[in-house]
Length: 568
Image 1 (cartoon, rainbow, N blue to C red):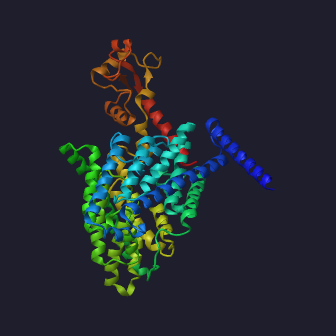
Image 2 (image 1 turned 180 degrees about the vertical axis):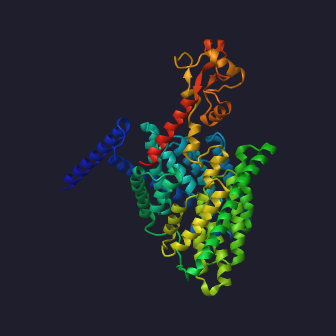
Image 3 (image 1 turned 120 degrees about the vertical axis):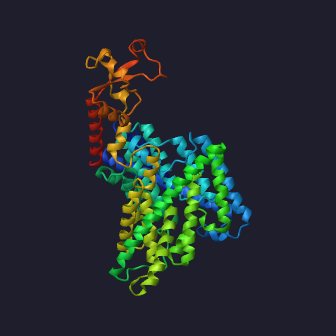
């Protein structure tokens, strides 16, 4: 019997390996069919889920070892008993190591995060930078372990993108397949990190892919569920935050208060986002003025964080303990307001100092304290028509996070899944809708899209804006000698007027030139630093001609292809 069991197990293992080889061969040569792609999504969900789980557990173990915390959920209670110099030294040394890692793994010393995944989905056929991504994951791991005031969702999302990009490169996946694989990996990573399968799937669609195409929904949902299973095998079916006082609306007359809370949370979210951008700009100016090496910048930020943590250890890490205190009413009004201000400053220092981490968890903490502050005031002014003040903390948590992420749907659901309380959806939806609507008008839709806009990548405006940056003159021009191309003699007057293009220019820069010049074509010349063929040198380095109609046709084809993918 034992021999038969071993033989049966061996046969099953061989069949499994044969199936994996068939899947790989199909991916390489024919591309995945629908059912096969669902199976691939399941594998992606498992791999990305384990990556997110290991990342989380690694941070927990390393942080507990460094700070000596028996329970990482009560980190700041342990940290406040440490000698002051330890609180100063730990994040400073952590920042120094982070700076060295980023200096060696990235060309610009910048941590890769969710914004880069959005860019990869929109402009890089579902790919992100692999080497820089691995370096960023290590940097964020150390940042969160040594006291950086940030969250783990950004690094986890980008780490999932690294996994999908590696596979996409190996199988030479086209843009649609690459984006779908990226969405599967992101959904699984978010779900595994927060035990939130619904929100994980919607986060990948709403924030990363930025469409809800039917063809992408099934595999992303499968991957999200797989990631959640990985989480629950380790932690069980438990919520991230346990509420001791379930909330309920006292009466519908209370709803206007949640409208007002939504507007306040929208402003708080804008302050948080702009503080990070301001800190990044000021940090860059100081670094340039004082000639500080870029690898030293995170260490300076770590020192500042340590100085704050001496008096306010609540800023260390994700801030789970303080968030729970806010959700359960364990803070008084003055504490909630003070901690909100200090946490905002700490997040700005962490992110502006190029240390690493994400903004979702900090925005949950800041939102919970903002909501609690508002709730304490509102329930004291009108106690006869008010529910519990912790209900406002719950709504504020979702409202600030939704405004920062620019994702009202997935954030609303992830807040429900983090707490397990589905009875107060009306209050949360009202606050989230108002905060998102207000904040999106004061920044470029969200924190991530504003980051991209600051890099001159116009993803916030949609495909009609960023597709222009993907189409280059060199691939659209008619080369010199083509019978449909204008002659050098026809191009000479335009060259004399300075109306000429380079082959590396994008349509984003070229189409306005056509509009101003009002000409049917423009000559394309070789850049000064690029050797030109001898005949081109004799003809003023002329390489070819770009016709206005060719540029518009290429742009139209790109728009049609994008629309077809988003509505498939």
